[in-house]
Image 1 (tube, rainbow, N blue to C red):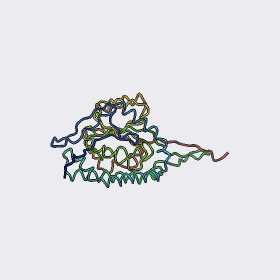
Image 2: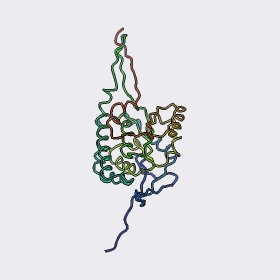
Image 3: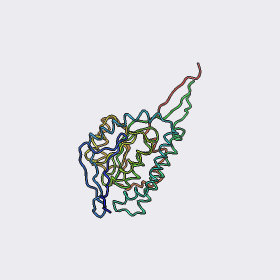
Image 4: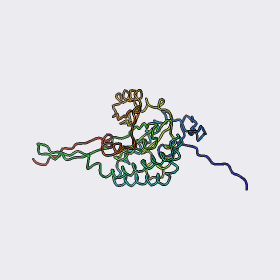
Amino acid sequence: MSHRLLITKTPKCYVGGAFIRSESGRVTALNDASGAFVANIPQCTRKDLRNAVEAAAKAGPGWAKRSAFNRGQILYRLAEMMEARAAELAEAIALSGISKAGAAREVAASIERVVHYAGWTDKYEQILGSVNPVASAHFNFTVTEPMGIIGVIAPDDSPLLALVSLILPAITSGNCVVALASSTQPYPSILLGEMLATSDLPGGVVNLLTGQRSEMLSTFATHEHLRALSGAVNATERKTLKLGAAESVKRVRLLKAEEPIDWFADTMQGAEEIRSLIEFKTTWHPVAA
């Protein structure tokens, strides 16, 4: 019996519901903790980022109009896909040298976080919206609305859990996301893209890029169709993002990557995380002459 060659994976980014290589054609070799070659990771460019924003813009209106119940179903389906490939996700995280137990813990927490936000899809409106007492003959109420397209910059630590923790509060409320994965540990995001593709999530709602922050942060900061930035970055990167965001008038929510961040903490999930990436509309309706 002849021996066949092993078919190795060609990692691709997930943009607009399709798997793409960088338009530049550049890749960077990913090695495991022992130095052994694992795969070539696409190095996305500013052009890839702009293409991802266009894909998100096309998907945005349809995703925002979906019922809260349907969005919850789709997120729960994502958790099912991740559960089915939990061992593979753990192996991807363990490439950095983290223990198998630590990698499995991160995968479990990531799946639980998806389920957590699946449960929030039809509840956050009741918590964050309100009926407002006013001293006039009006019925006054406030409802939430998605902002649009959110730019996400994931840190290098907890590459899967941090990424999903930043993406989920945005898409729970009907936003779309363009996310830049960990530069040093990008492989979990490659696998996450494959699971998003089988989760019934419409193409373009979540777009995952890999590459170097230094090449794309300025475009994240200044792109006028990105309505907010969410992530964990160092002091120099925060300055770049805040200056660019001020010019394009976008909301900025950035954690300090140089300080320890406990992505496993319950404080990293919930209604307040959703609140930071939505807008509020207040309506005055006359009730008497």
